[in-house]
Image (cartoon, rainbow, N blue to C red; front, side, top):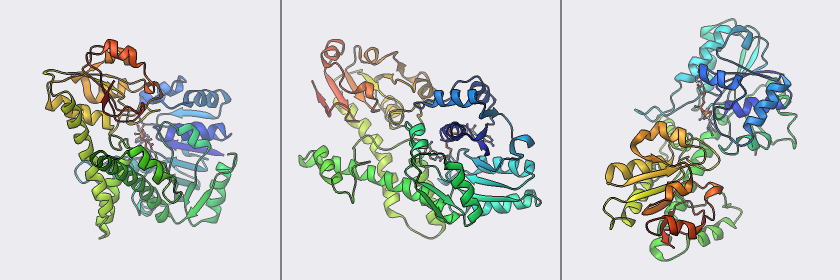
Length: 424
Ligand SMILES: NC(=O)c1ccc[n+]([C@@H]2O[C@H](COP(=O)([O-])OP(=O)(O)OC[C@H]3O[C@@H](n4cnc5c(N)ncnc54)[C@H](O)[C@@H]3O)[C@@H](O)[C@H]2O)c1
C-alpha cells in the first residue's frame, strides 16, 4: 500500500518506519529541511528505543522515503495520507492550535488528484474532521478525499513497541470501504490488533477522554501521596492495594512530580476548552490541571526546604526528560522544577540526563550547569534529586555517592530507589 505521512515527529517517524517495516511503501514528509536531511542520512532526529534500527531497515529495503515538501508525486497514488503534525497549546486560550494541521491539509488539498483517505492522526478537537472536509472541498472541489480520524495512543519511550503491539486501533469513519482499507494497512501486525470502528467525532473524543483520564489518575495518586505523608501511611502500599483491584488497575498509580510531556498538559487544557464551548463543565479535568501545575511548585519548594540550612546550595538533578525512555523535555516536570529553583533561590543546579541534555539546553540555556554523567552531577552536591525514572538511576552506588557528595541528602521523586526524601 502506498502511504504518505506528514510530520516526522515523535508520532510520525515511528509510525512511518513501522508501516514501512510491514511492507508498505511509505513516504515521510516534514517541512523542516534539517530533519529530512538527517533522516535521509539514516540518522534519527529524536530518541526512541529501536527507532534507528527500524529506520535503517526501512531505508535499506527501499520501503521508506523522506522528502521536504508535499509535491504532487508525494500524494499522487497514495491510498492513505496520514497527518501527524503537532497540535500544540494555544498559549492565550488553552485550545489546540490547528494552524499546522490546516497548513498541511491545504498543501494536500492543492496537490491531491485521485481519491485518497486522509487520516488525521494528530490529536484534534471534536468536529475537526468535519472542518477539514469542508476546507478541502472549498480548496479543491474536484478532489475526492475521505477524511477519517485515526488517533494515536503510543507512549513516548515505547513508541516502536507500541506501534507493533497497540492496545487498540481506533478508526473514526462510517465508510465500510475505508474501514477495510485501514484493516488492510494494519493486517501484517501480529498478533492482530483490536480495532475499534466508531464515528469520526467519537474517535476524536476518545483520544482526549483517554489522556485526561490518565492525567486524572496521576493527579489523584499524587494527592493520595500527600495525604499518606501527612497521615503516616505509605503511598506504595496504598497504591499496591488499590491497583490490585482490576476495576482500578495498577498503571498510572505511581506518585511523582506530576505529569508532563507534549500530550497530557495540552490535551487536558484543550479538552476543557472544547467542553466549555459546548457548555459542559469538566470540573475533574479542571482541578487536575490546576493541581498538576501546583505540584511542580510544591516539589520545588520541598527541595529548597531540604537545603535551607545551606547558603548557596549545589543541587544535583538526575533526569531532565519528562519521563524515562525519551529525550522529550516538552512540559517536563524536571524543567519546571529547575526553573522554579533557579528563580527563587541562590542554588546552583547541576543536571544530567542520559538522552535529553540537548533538548533541555534549548529550554534552560546556560542557567544551569550540565554534567557529562550522573556521578559528575553529584560531585560536591549538597543534595541529589531524581526527577526522571531512567533505569540508570535505579540502585545507584550509595557508598560512592556518600564519598563524592557534600551531604547525604537524596530526594527521589520518581521512587527509583525506594529512598524517599531521606538521607543515607
Ligand atoms: N508525542 C506523543 O507521544 C503523542 C502521542 C499521541 C498523539 N500525539 C499527537 O500527535 C501529533 C504529533 O505529535 P508529535 O509529538 O509527533 O509532534 P512533533 O512536534 O514531535 O512533530 C510534528 C512534526 O510535524 C512537522 N510539521 C509541522 N507542520 C508541517 C507541515 N505543514 N508539513 C510537514 N511537516 C510539518 C514538524 O516539523 C514536526 O517535525 C500531535 O497532535 C500530538 O498531540 C502525540
